[in-house]
Amino acid sequence: MTVEAKIGGGAGAGAEVELWLVDARVPQPALDLELLDAAERERAARFLHESDRVMYEVAHAALRTVLAARTGLPAAGLRFEREPCPCCGELHGRPRLAAGAVPTPLPAFSLSHGGGLVLIGVAPDTTPIGVDVEALPSAETARETAVSLHPAEQAEFALHPDGAAPAAFARIWTRKEAYLKALGTGLGRNLAADYLGDDPAALPPGWTVTTVQVGPSHAAAFALATPGATFTLRESFT
Image (cartoon, one colour):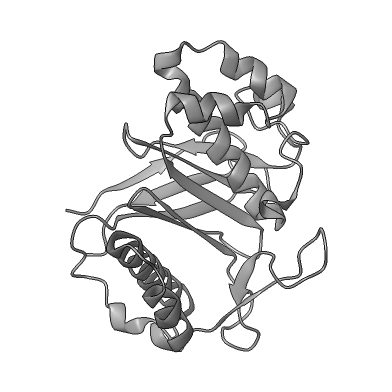
């Protein structure tokens, strides 16, 4: 079954983001794992657990499939590189298609996988984008990690009873990680520096940061460096 939903819009709506959600815990016959290049295969082989290996392979085959459809180039021929990190200048910032591999403008994209789910985000142009998907943590992990959040995020999290703590924390965390991935810093940036909680007026100006519903056992979000963005969520390659 193909599930497609367009979320957002209305007055002032801006760019539209394409999101793809893939469940790596079930067979994905529409995806060709042979698309992976030698470096991806080598990394996949290093995973100790089969479930982690399969999730990685599905994620990268899906990413190649999505980007090939956007660029019109063969999926197996796409090459990737990293932008310089804004914090240190080393080449471990945002991923991008290698120069010369695609026509201009280059589509910005982001990939995340966690707890068996894969989330891919593709911007309409070169606008920086980040996505994150995570399985809900335990209440203990949520409480222990929440102390690293922005003070206002900590205050919001503290309002939730223990039973709601995992979902409340994961909502904040995925929004934060999506934003940090879009910045290109990842977790190298101080987690307490930016507010990504539930108050729209307090979010980083000029950004769209949106929670994406992906089921009761996971949390997900995307961030785009432009305001008022909408998104379309697809859950099948058939």
